[in-house]
Image 1 (spheres, rainbow, N blue to C red):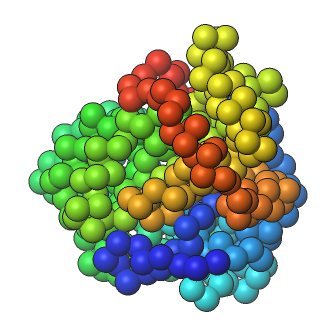
Image 2: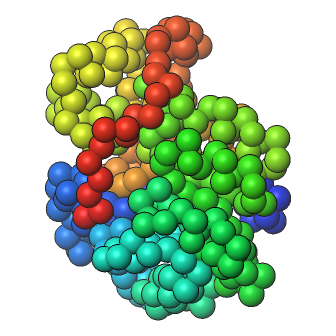
Length: 320
């Protein structure tokens, strides 16, 4: 698989990356359990694949994701050469604190779990859920510490990873981030991050587009998974999904392949982050990335309506 420059960082990533939130066992978010054995088998499949980037976070599964990744890395004798390991700074999950001291503590926790002394990519995560945005953006705050960690060599590159674009876009404009991660906001169903992606591209900031399946429904199907962006969906809300499924069926295309390639083929997107929790999903992702999709299918899909409102505006956030 070819690699693409990660913005102006000097790093290169494959156009597909894997996300490890589910590997931390987060049933409140995904609705199912992931055992340690299943997580290890999935991680082995990831490291054996042609994909060279894995994304996790301090708070995925309250640390279980990083711990499981660290165990897999140690079993393999270290991070593979040329591999991009990405994690995120998170608030204190009890108090919501995300100040400079918490940033330092968060990365120390992550490095210990992962069993490494540095990471290639480090993001500030979910500031919209922290107790005080001022202690993040203000002088001497969390963002200042994030960039200090880069200066210290603890991370090669730093970014911003969050959901709400109304908070994210202003922060992005003010800081020299190397990369951003947006999730669920640039899919076949929703384009609310499009203007932000335009801005990032003009500044040479790498765009990592996560959750191309709108929380899984475009991969697993509306019948099997009647949820959109981790929330139970009504019949009316599922109607656009079913239209996509019918359109794909008419052209002999798997909806998951169309959803994945919709992101991967966009010129603004450096890499698309796909969450996986089984070796079978790793293989399926690679198959979908390579699937031939006819121009007529893209024309038909391009003619379908989409939403540009926040897809998680009414989501009840659960970190587990």
